[in-house]
Amino acid sequence: MEGKEEDVRVGANKYPERQPIGTSAQTDKDYKEPPPAPLFEPGELSSWSFWRAGIAEFIATFLFLYITVLTVMGVKRAPNMCASVGIQGIAWAFGGMIFALVYCTAGISGGHINPAVTFGLLLARKLSLSRAVFYMVMQCLGAICGAGVVKGFQPNPYQTLGGGANTVAHGYTKGSGLGAEIIGTFVLVYTVFSATDAKRSARDSHVPILAPLPIGFAVFLVHLATIPITGTGINPARSLGAAIIYNKDHAWDDHWIFWVGPFIGAALAALYHQLVIRAIPFKTRS
Image 1: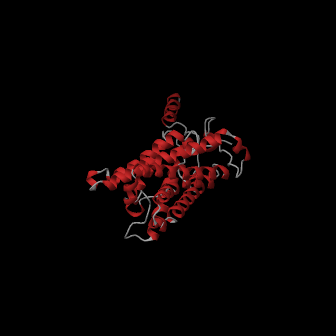
Image 2: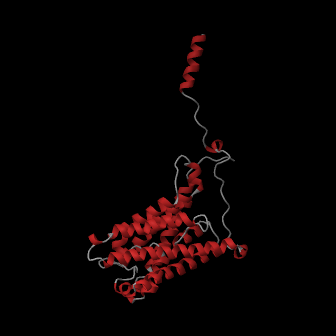
Image 3: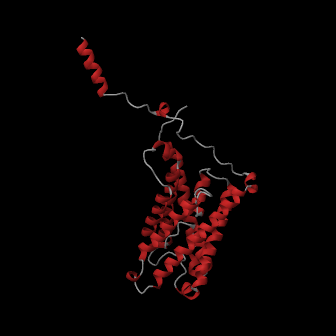
């Protein structure tokens, strides 16, 4: 009998108890749901951190436009694609700058650098309306200044080579351009939500992640796919800054696409993440 009892004990050790799941699995370090941001927060306007965040968005978007539009100009000035970095280089410039700038500004402003990202986070109640509007204004101003500096360095090539302005390419319809912008922005904003989601980090804590990396990589991939269609907007501030400084009729003809498309894509990504992805069970404790 004693031998049988020992065998039972040994057998039990072979199949240890399952780890607790659901509410019994949460530890003190697990995620706690933050309250939604208020629609209006008057106290923000008297806080230095509020204004500092706006300045960070301005500088980041300024640098973003400066580097990326210069890259586009370099490719267009080359006699052929083989003599320049080509489409891949343009995509790397956009994705690489987003990676670097999000890394630099995430702790100050959240590193939006894009009104579509700000809009998506606003819909998810991650920031107040006043902060969202302020960010969008500063992003657009930074983009205008960044494109303006590029034109100041090379005024004639800037005007003759398109100024980095977004337009729907010949052979594509406005609907195709709008669809490309919607899907491209969805990819970006969905990645932003996933990479910065503390709930996902708590659930998948075994998967280390540096948030700016997947965000920048998403920008890179979207540019590879949609540069031939629209030049890739997915950022209304980027499109507005280049269009204002370039200021040619054909740059304005399709400009609405680069606002409507990104805002629709951002809204869809916010809804998908909040209503579907965030509904996945994870370890919690009541």
